[in-house]
Length: 69
Image (cartoon, rainbow, N blue to C red; front, side):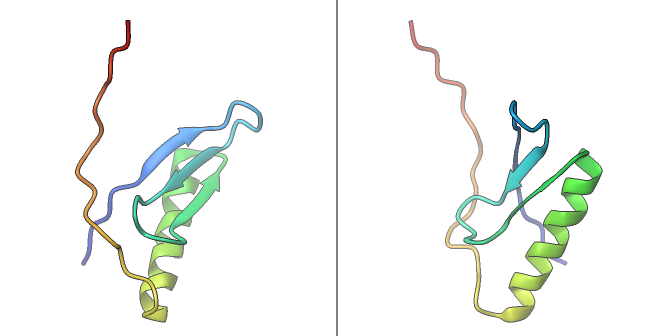
């Protein structure tokens, strides 16, 4: 079992949730709900790993809030 961290945003134009795995080319998807997005990302990551061509290029560390005055 492998674990991946996804960044999730909500598109203001479509209302869809959009997710991607940082530094993992091709690991991105969208969904109308967070559950749908989760399932879609699982499917994409599984396919990429099975192909053996794609692997994460680095490890996701986190996010940080930047305050600009």
